[in-house]
Image (cartoon, rainbow, N blue to C red; front, top):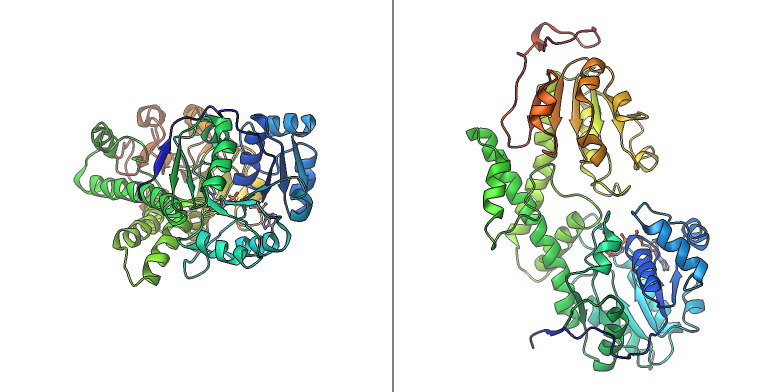
Length: 466
Ligand SMILES: NC(=O)c1ccc[n+]([C@@H]2O[C@H](COP(=O)([O-])OP(=O)(O)OC[C@H]3O[C@@H](n4cnc5c(N)ncnc54)[C@H](O)[C@@H]3O)[C@@H](O)[C@H]2O)c1
């Protein structure tokens, strides 16, 4: 049966049921805060005591623009509260939204242990008529499996699959103005109750089966990941034929069938979702005896992209790179978040350290999270401190503050004027105007000065002629 798009989202006098949101991370907490902002009463259940304490003070335990203000208001209003136990939350909530993590296992499978633990608690604690909403990203068939587990309780506890599509860095905006919500399941009353809760946001709701909803989530992330890998391959070809991928991507994206979104070449996809969801979908396909070749290629291209970037840094900083100082600008997997899960910066910094480079990094918000993950990397107070004495400056995350750096000032601080723009986010003319050689991904190098590395030893003060 085809999914049904419910466009009548004005709430229609549906009762505003209180909700329990299990898992107070990027998805659970932002969802809970937005629901509370829309007037719903929400109880967040969080096992991590530090996260719980922060939430109860109205402070976001994660960096997400706008979340602190929203939480402060909603905790103060009493609409949002936090508890340690699912049973506590279920005293007055008959909708339980599961938003716990589903990270990758070493073989690519999604680790469903947190979802399974929550499902077992719900089977023991949830009252008859409680709707379990799976918001975590889970492999096809998981909703049906959880449904079978809950059925064994002898009570009616329907499962609705309602995947989340938000992007970190603009998560609030993405929930308040989503393109669509997807609710999958077979129990009409449960689907209606979840749709009524989501009507708080006035977004069209697509109704599907549980497995359909699960695959819509994986399919969407995998498709975007493939788009990113595709344009990165185009960039790699542009490097070889001396073309500018910026104009190629723009020209392709003007075709409405293609679109500009996710057509930005760079260091590939990272973060907590795309890499793990591509791997999990590929694993799900493999389990069915099916090889999903395009997913395999997307992942391979993604890994290669970081290696190519390190190679560009080596060529810019001086090969061998041992003893050379590389300034990494940006550590978070993308701007607007402190999330370092699968961030390209981790692989890049680790490889540079293995090659003997001295790596100095800066990030506007992710340095505290990065310190334990990158013990060999020096962390600098700001971008200029990171660039001081650098043999190459490598842009890894396109934070807005890096787009307006004073390259004249930077030129006085670096040892060699070499910029490698891993995100193609800088203005090549502005950077090269200050004597820098500008290298990017799939864009022609703007060279100001000739190679000087043959005669240069690391550690010797030297400045290129502009
Ligand atoms: N982060 C994103 O951008 C994003 C976007 C869409 C979908 N998703 C999916 O949403 C799910 C959650 O992702 P996230 O990034 O919010 O994860 P997260 O790790 O930030 O948050 C999960 C939270 O659940 C808590 N938790 C774990 N077990 C618990 C339990 N038994 N009871 C109560 N709390 C428990 C953890 O302590 C943690 O705070 C994942 O499946 C992910 O793939 C994430």
